[in-house]
Length: 282
Image (spheres, rainbow, N blue to C red):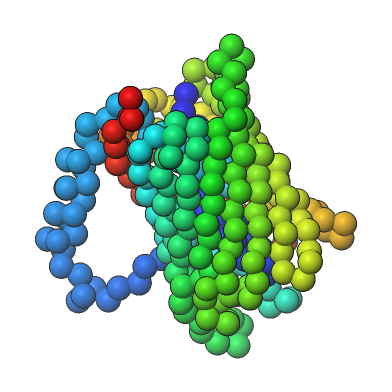
């Protein structure tokens, strides 16, 4: 069974939302040519209908998967998110559109870029919009233990201060995960992440995730997850759930929602992921 998607978290020091989130792209209805939109999705469907291996994504859950996209393959994972979180004892509403771009250098190593646009509204009705700090990263698939159905990998990202002041952390930040997945049987899998992040202000936090995913059939999967982060002063606990719908081996849609258990946080998200297969290099 393939691992269920995750959901892009927000790589920012002052956000309580998950570090990989996704998105809202706001366009006025009169700016959209419906025929062009339908043509775009039709082209994606046609191009992605020929596949050598089924797409495996890092959304909509919060757990990073241990495996890469494969040599010379290019994968786009995008989504829309609407939610709110607590920032300095004040509630902030967020609308976000984010994309994760993944390219396979080898079968076990991939390069990653995360780009996200967000719109924030504070309790005082202050509105801030723009593209947040660029995030660059790499994933390495370390081991595949087929006899026990286990994969292990590491994922690391660096947040580069590239956004305007209101949306930028102002300094480099580092996000690092050990990612593990276990196939319990053909329908059920468990995955988890353990991490260490270095944030502005010389702060260290330790994120974690634990996800249980079940395949209902060949194209529909559901998941339930616990996630959060802790340091010497605080232990955070949140939960999220959702499903993925596989249109074909290279194209997947997802829906998810999350709720803070130990802190103020909630979100709803929709996403789409598309794999473009390259030459295997063999």
